[in-house]
Image 1 (cartoon, rainbow over the protein chains, first blue to last red):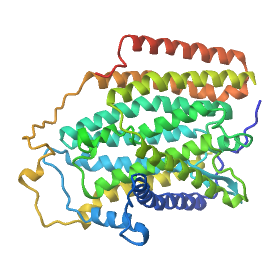
Image 2 (cartoon, one colour; image 1 turned 45 degrees about the vertical axis):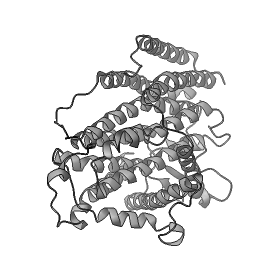
Image 3 (tube, rainbow over the protein chains, first blue to last red; image 1 turned 120 degrees about the horizontal axis):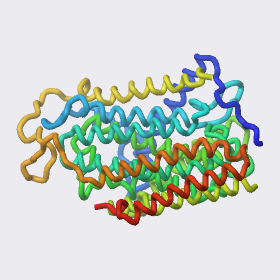
Image 4 (cartoon, chains in turn blue, cyan; image 1 turned 180 degrees about the vertical axis):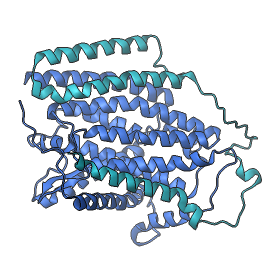
Length: 333
Length: 121
C-alpha cells in the first residue's frame, strides 16, 4: 500500500486561486509569440538560411509585426459559409488550448501556494476532456467554410485526432499505474527516484508520436498538407481568425510538451533551490518543443493511409502491450 | 474540495474572452472600405467554377474510424480507474481481470484488422 505523496485537491484563498491562474495564463501566453519566431529561425538554420532577422533585434519583433498585419486585414467570409459557425470554429480551438494550460504543474505547494492551475483528483482526464474540444473547432470551421478543401481537411483531421487519441490515453496509463494517481503533481512527486522516461520509455515514445499527430504537426500535418489540400480546414480563413489557429497550434504544442515533461521527464524536478522549479519545468517543455521543431525539419510528410495504419496497427497494439507489461511489473514488484 | 476547481472557471473565462477577441478583432480594427463581391466571395478553387453545396457527402471510412474510436476509447476509459488502484491493490486478481479485459479487446482488434476495416480506402 502506497500513501498518496501529495494532498490532491488543496485550495488556497479565493483571490490567490484567481491571481495564480491569471499569472500562469499570461506567462504561457507571452511565451507563445516567442515560440513562433524561434521555430522560424530554427527551421531557417536547419535549411542553411537565416530565418527572420529584419524586424527588431535578430528578428525578435517578427511576431508583433505578424499580429499587427493580420489584425489589420479586411473581414472576409465566403458566400457559401455559415456565418455563426464560421466565427465560432477558431474561437473554440483557442478556448481548448487555453483551458488545458490549467493542468500543467510548474511546482508543488510552496508557502501555501500551489504552482499549478488545478491539482484535482481527475487530473489528466481534464486534459483529455478539454483538449478534445479542439476537435469540434476544427470540424466546425472546416464544414462551415463551404469549401471542398476545408471540408476534406476537417474530415482528415477528425479521423486523425480520434485515431491517435486512443494510443495517447493508453501511453499515459502506464505512468498512471506506476504512480497510482491521476493528479499530475502526485505523478511528478512519484518520480523522485527515477524519471518515468526510463521504465516507461515505450509509453514516452508513443505519447510523443501521438502528440505530433494530435497537434497536427509534421510529419503528421496531413489536414493541412499544402500540396494536396491548400491549407486544410484553414483555407478560407484570414486575418485574426487565421491567427487563432496558429496561436492554438503553439498552445497545444506547449501543453502536450508540458504533459510529457510532467509524466515522463520528472516535471519540475532538478538540482538547485525550490524557486528554480518553474524554470526547470519550462526548460524541459522548451527542450520537447525543440524536438517538435527538429522533427518538422527532418521528416517528410506521411501518406494518409500510412498515417492511419501507423495509428491503428502499430501504436495501438504497442500501447496495449505496454500497459499489460506495466501492470504485471507493478503487481510483481 | 470543490473550491480547488475554481481556476478552471478562470481559465474557461479567459479562454472564451481570448477566443471571441480573436474572432471579432478583425471586424473592429481591420479595413472596412472594400466590399467583397463577385469572384472574391467564392470559396477557393483551382480556376474551376466552384460547385459547393452544404450537403457534402463523405466516405464511409470516416464512420468506420469513428465507430472503432468509440470502441477503443471506452476501453481506455475503463482501464483508467483500474490503473489508478493497480499499485495500491497489489493483487493478482486485479491483474488477471485487466488481462482478460485487454485480451478480449485485442481479439476484437485482430478481428477488425483481418476484416480490413483498418485499411484506409
